[in-house]
Image 1: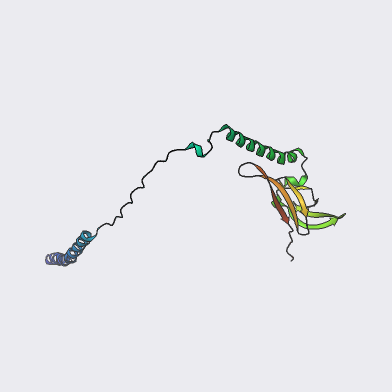
Image 2: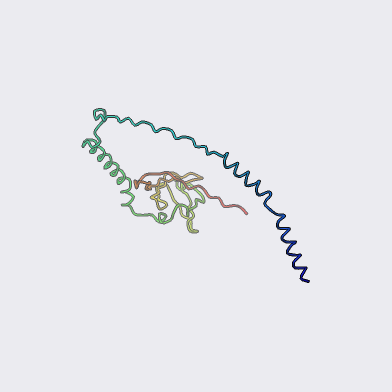
Length: 181
């Protein structure tokens, strides 16, 4: 019985010796050869351009801090502010109409008609119908109706641009037809 464990140990040791480093030595030699042959390829950096300073000649242009130039710029700016104020001032002074409480995207044009030879549009807002004519105001951007056709209402709105200046823009409400079932 003592013979069996001893034989098993000899057999295991022999099998482990069979898995020796015969292929490992070849692999290590190949890796060493590849490392010796590999050379990094570095592209040289181009020489920096030579800086040639240029003398400043003030005779060619206007002085940047010239009082005349600054005065002209301030006049242009104040004229623009005045024109912006003139654009929005009448809108702030007038009485608001009921449809100015609703955004344009909540309104739908559902029809048009001629009432006493004046084009009139039918608007649906919050499930209520309103009649509007040229000159009425709609939406929250001081939108004034400029034209009414059978299929659309043309508006002139006054909005602020990215710089905060008041500008006019044209927009329209198109006729909304409900799908027939």
